[in-house]
Amino acid sequence: MTQAPARPRTAPPHDEGLRPVKAAMLVTDLAFLLYWSVALLGLIPAAYAYKDYDDPVMSDWNYSFLPLDVAASATGLASLYLCRRERRTGSPHRTAWRPLMLVSLTLTSTAGLQAVVFWALRGDWSPTWWIPNLALLLFPVPAIVRLTRRAATGPPPGRRAEGSVTSAGGTRP
Image (cartoon, rainbow, N blue to C red; front, side, top):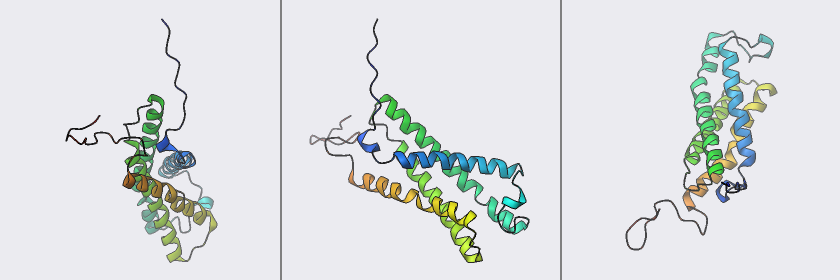
């Protein structure tokens, strides 16, 4: 019994241009989880901590990002998994990764924005906190625009949306 040749792994048309963003998401989502694991275990040396690390209010502010960052990571990693699975199976109708990716990128950008605004209000201009938080704020923006524009315009020409209505009133698979 012979097996059918494996399909080449090429980026589907809906996936073009997202490769750098997906790589940045993977690094960011894993870094969020690593940071929170290290922070919760109390392993961050004071020399590398943010300004006023020992202040309880600052600690509360920092930990207020925990649910936001974990939600960004969970939705981001889930979207990357589903996107990869779609790419492997070649099934173009499974687009569950899109909304998850959009949510993850929005949460990531929001976390960066909140931190940047906070440090600006405090007048703390340390590049060790500004650079990573500006990156969190900005790297998702082009992909958010791309994903929302794609959602507004529908599938590329020549491809039908799943369950689209026919002229006879029925639905197409």
